[in-house]
Length: 443
Image (tube, rainbow, N blue to C red; front, side, top):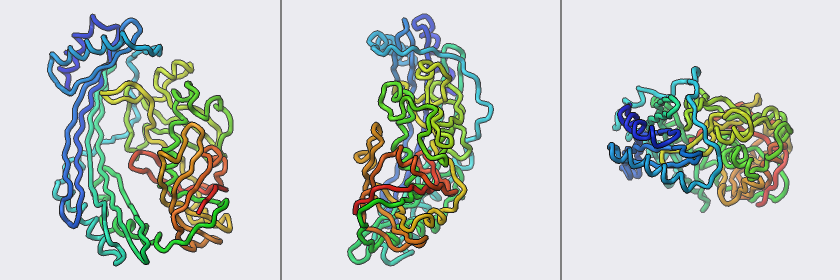
């Protein structure tokens, strides 16, 4: 696809640049939100753009356009050459015709693209309907949403690389507000999939209501140190919040608390963290990254020992190693590094077993303030939370909102058990429920 566009840019840039890379992205997305069985919002959007990255006299320049005509394609090449003159970054950029990835799973479902919009709207309506019918304490369903999307990307460079990829996805979520004795709590359930038949509106609605009503009538948490279980969704949230410490650029610039720790034990031996660009169930799975470099499964922490960081070709060259296939940029942006399917590998315990290992355990099922309450450079965090008190393996009661605080690395060292209930969130971060030996709780 878009062969003429690429030929036009390459032909014009041939004698003007030393190297050039073209990145094209095209996407469409749909979403519908229901309120009182009426469509509150209905969005369908298309986007398309081309970005170029050029090397001229060892300087790098970028430019992009969303207008597709020959004159504009020539203009962005000229703009990128002009921008390169003012580049102060001394990073060496060397493009190449990177090999194909032969083991990448299929991430596009033709059947998903065929689902009728009427069925999509009905799913969202059913989420709201079943949530309201499930429990009389439900007084509002502020979120009953279905959304899906499809994206196409193509990258080519002057060294002969030319790759393309298409993927799609769908997700739905329902948020329920329940009230009893002037106590109001929110519960949320979601599913992301490429198979529309996996959506079960009644099941999702009931789970959302249960999460909401279980939290009602909470008692104050006594401040102190507790063993803590983060459920699988909140553990994925914690992992995502501190993902930047594994970014090689941050490490090289001294902005990661992991600098100088490769080969050291930095977590309990039960902890293995990987970034898997080829995960068959991941929603950031792709055969190549934003440089066209093959993606892979990168072990970052193995049995507690720090093994690697996430690299693009620039940071990898500085460290004298190969890229991990985590180069990242949109057609509008410059090259960076990002996670793909970022996960803590599942353990062997049943989730219920995690609550039997201490007399008192606090289960955390909701976190707030991730941006303001977590310092990715120091690893310290102090976050608003909701959850339950367990005693002797039995859930006693919910807790009024409280604060959980600690340090991310110390938390990883304090892992005592990892459950087998692995789950991805909607941003391709995944985890199981995990028991931490001790964290600070403030009621």
